[in-house]
Length: 305
Image (cartoon, rainbow, N blue to C red):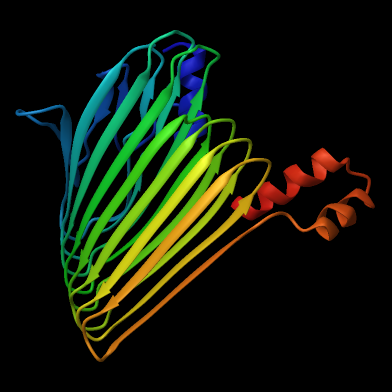
């Protein structure tokens, strides 16, 4: 693997070398390297592009890395990955996609991830997207995440778009059973003429289920962002959705939070705030010796951390 692809692996998955444990590294439309373990099996799908990740019941303190890197201009692919997490397992899953495009054709990765999480299981899922390259072709990523949470299971999802993605349509769907818990933290940066759409729809079907959705985004240049969030409370449950965005230059940000209470015992809250960087924040940092540009960068980095 060349240095460009190695550097992208560091950015999207913090991989400086082949990881220990289970992993599947996909590069330019093909499997580059793979390893299964005694408790985590990775199998190639027979009917379409993608893999099945099967995690045995009771698996503890293990991780799965499934990064995707594209360094070929004009390559477009759709990949389907299914995760079957056994009862009482506790695992970390590191995903992400990096595209390096220096050519004239569009490079695109659409990833469909489905999670089937059994009773009592806990999952930490980290997904990072990154684009780079000085070609005329666009860098496009459209992740779709579908989650089915069993009784008293949990998933914490960290969804990050670092920079350099020209267009993205980020779709998340989740259904929660009794006592299940979902936490989604999104951090998103757009600049120049980039476009990003986030569409989250959560159904709290089980008694005492809960969802907490937090989005932090920064829109620069002439970029455009659309945040859609819907929480449906169908039982005694708790749901919270929060969108907080910094808008700069000539960017456009739209937030459409929605809560639907279909039970008298559903407790649902939504919040949305969009605004520019406060002038006093920049002035305060400039008194410490930073330039205006450096102060702005520090504020943005801190906001998205």
